[in-house]
Image (cartoon, one colour):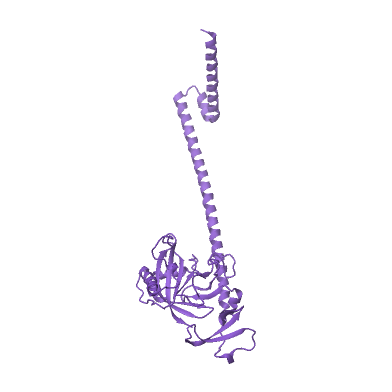
Length: 351
């Protein structure tokens, strides 16, 4: 045979023998003493040796699988524990911030001043530097049941009882309250930046709950046909959370009235509609409650009222007629994308 051919064959054989020996050596190193002794015992057959080796590797595989499984469990436990701690911390912070916000509103409620018993100019206190004025008629020159007392602050006429709150922040426009609910808050108006108080408290500091605020297309000074007020639906049952209760007729029956007193006068409203809806696309021509402020005519006014009442899931006998002043309260609802829950009321008292 040609030596040139034989030499590669010999080299390959040596390399294969070397690899086989290495595999056997590694295998033997992995075996415990009991199996090594078994292999060294000439009285034990090869099949028995193979069975022991197979059993050994099966047990090792089970141990490794269990170890890996426990490792995965430990990692998952660590992940879930981290998620839980983060969630607990977030919820704790959420409720703490809401608690601080409500304490602030408590202080603001205490700032409402009791009106002095003034009937005419002779009753105005002389021991004050404030310019106090008395009005005996409303904006339509109709006599008021009780004269209103105002104070001029930085050139703005403000109801006497709200003078301290207005001094604290000139964006304050009024106070909204629904008896029997948690809704009892100041309302803000910022003509140059409608959503300024979306995530700010009364003093302009960051607040998840924000502060109730008017749509800037609303006119509170000389009331527009509709005044629209926005507020958050907080999970802590604060701000406009309780509006959602008007889904139930029984709740409506017990909470029909809304008080919205402004820096210009006191107003009481009776609810005429409460419904779920959503914010529409710009090119959507269906009913959009948030676009109505002043009716061009009776037909437009009736269109708004009728749509609101048709969307209400139960019958509310009270309705509104052209010439009535409306109040619309709006908050988020999670029944659909960009969902809203809306309560509409008509003014029944003004002073």
